[in-house]
Amino acid sequence: MNDPAAFETEAVARLRAEIPGKAIVAASGGIDSTTAALLVEKALGDRARAVFVDNGLLRAGEVERVGSYFRSSGLHFEVVPAADRFFSALEGVTEPEEKRRRVGEAFIRVFEAEADRFGTDRLVQGTIAPDWIESGGSLRDTIKTHHNVGGVPKNSRLVLVEPLRDLYKDEVRTLARHLGIPAADRQPFPGPGLAVRVNGPVTPDRVRRARVAGAIVEEEVERAVAAGTVPRPWQYFAVLLPARTVGVTGDNRVYGEAVSVRIVESVDAMTATSMAVPHSVLKTIAERITRDLSGEVVRVLYDVTDKPPATIEWE
Ligand code: XMP
View (cartoon, rainbow, N blue to C red):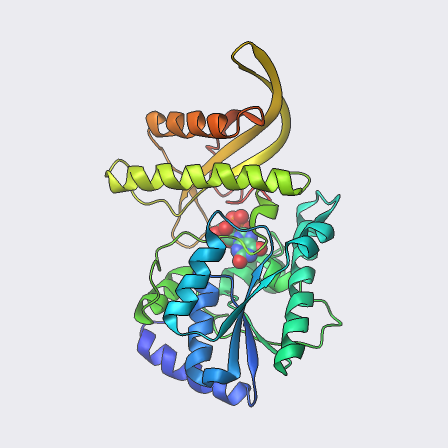
């Protein structure tokens, strides 16, 4: 895609042809799905409804942030609270692909119910090229099933519409900037959310720890970027590990968990490099995480692995 204006015109025309009636849009607040939602809004107006699912696996402040952005952008949208459904679907599951499958299926069930209420069978998703390439959609092996690709059950009656499926992330960002989406440089966040950032079992408590730690990583990295200490990374987040490890607070022994901090540079997420962040930034992150999660997280590690051999997310 060289010309975002031409892409927009073509995509809007294609959406009008593909969707004769109404459609709902799976809108996570991320750049991909927000871009898709704005294209659909332009194509269909009030025949479109963006559906934002609060699945209990989101980053700190996300529901408020996305809600207020959607309101200000004039999108037709609704927020569906569904944390309980997702936590029950994930109960006892530790295998990453199974987590993705369960999250994907729970999303689809929520979207089916919302599509019924809105009177449509069309579901627009912001799937982009690496999602289906890494999900085994081309000649490559499945690296990981992105929830919005692998999670659509065969028996779903929803008809998928994917206006961005041939674009790479940098192209979506260009298009998003053209459409006036703020924070088009915001870091990507995986569809299965914090479920794939708590390594091991997914419980509300463990997700809360990953959320608190992740918010600290974001704040400290953004502070360092603003101060010119580091360039803006591609992604920066925390992963809660299932390791149990000993720490000490005051005179007390604590047997807690560990957090791994992941800060990577990348162009298109197909490869990535662990960023050489100054030790002082990492130390501040470690001090804040172990203080705010005192008694729960006692150790903070920095992940120096590139992609490949690791992937960006831990799961
Ligand atoms: P990996 O971990 O495969 O991630 O190196 C590549 C990029 O994709 C994001 N990611 C996802 N995005 N649904 C998404 O929409 C997913 O299931 C998913 N899994 C990983 C990841 O954050 C990185 O930017």
